[in-house]
Length: 386
Image (cartoon, rainbow, N blue to C red):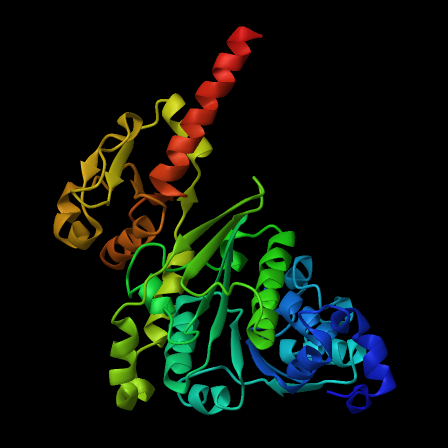
């Protein structure tokens, strides 16, 4: 393609892109012609939007009905104090059009739902999931399958993040990785559990990178793979994902898409966010003080034995309502599972019938407890040797 097809201003602005042999003028035209929909202008959406804007993506859509709050400014770096009280999508457009006036930014201030998702997705080539709740993730997944759009997924929790690409060239979907009601299918809302401010920047940048690779047709796409990032250890790993019949189920239920109960996930998320959690370190202090604690392990019967320090009842999460009489609601009850997700669901079920029970979920589950005890033992040995 001829340089004349770009203005001098564009050639100057995107010159570092164009110098790359994997991009060149042809690749820059692909970026200019691309239409990317970013759902959520929060911690993940902000860095995605910044880098896609700077790269010269021709059309960027932003979906967000939320308002900028002062607590957002710690990690949502598109916004400043002057944006507090503004709609996030509009505030993002304000910044992005000043960053790059050569692109088109389209704002959608309504909430994404079953009534508008399919029509909205049809206008874009790629969808970026920057949401933080289970309902939205399943909705985005299903709408993208039905419209044939790839989804660049990201999720964050405290110091850890996830990145993947779903529904790319008939590849696996979010439901293939996380079928409904499976442990690990959500990273709880950072507004309740907290998140280190730089983490969304890291994960959002990975998401922007996947978008660029898809558009340019270069590199190895994270389709069929879930990348796990731990910001504390600077380690990352890959989990491979196989395509399952979950995709076919969504395609077969096309006619009922508008009536599926996605909102139910939101209700469950909100209930789980109200549950008190206890860290491994805090629990160890209670044990050391001789506190009376009943431990309830809600993992399945076929899973590994309970840690000796946490010996108590083994009641699989599916059976908790039938076993309420076994739970001592007069004392502190610590509920745990492998990673801290099923325990939240179990407590949510119990609280629905026994709202005054003194229940706590072990944050991070057995995995976190074993890590804590291992580190404690290591420190003890080092202290004895010093």
